[in-house]
Image (cartoon, rainbow, N blue to C red; front, side, top):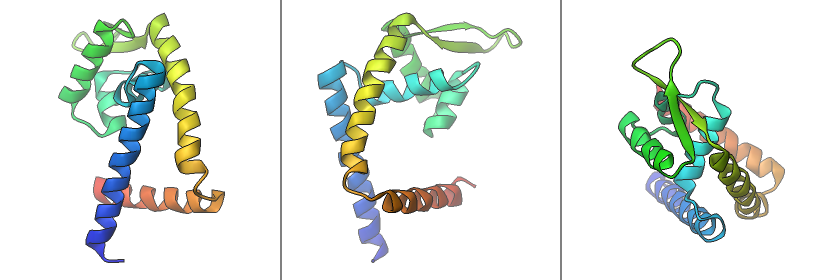
Length: 141
């Protein structure tokens, strides 16, 4: 396959996949895919800071901080003082954040299964995942 065509297919697929998932989460759970991603990172990362959110999602620290600000204003997470670093805060989900994560996470998993799981065999998913991991590692250095 010609590289420009491969690039176009990859980017268009990512855009369509993101937009489809985002629309479904907005309709079913009144949240965005971007917000869900941040909630998942905070939940999965002990002593999570904005820097960990940025690193996990490959976004800027400024963008991550603004997104966390929105989640904090919505009552889905809080910043607490870092016990060893006065210049940093630890992010924690609130009870409302836990509820959104549970509901939207279940919808996200269901839609991922339909959009990525059903069209591909387990072998194809494994190969696709390995290929994406290789490509990400090659440009992360």
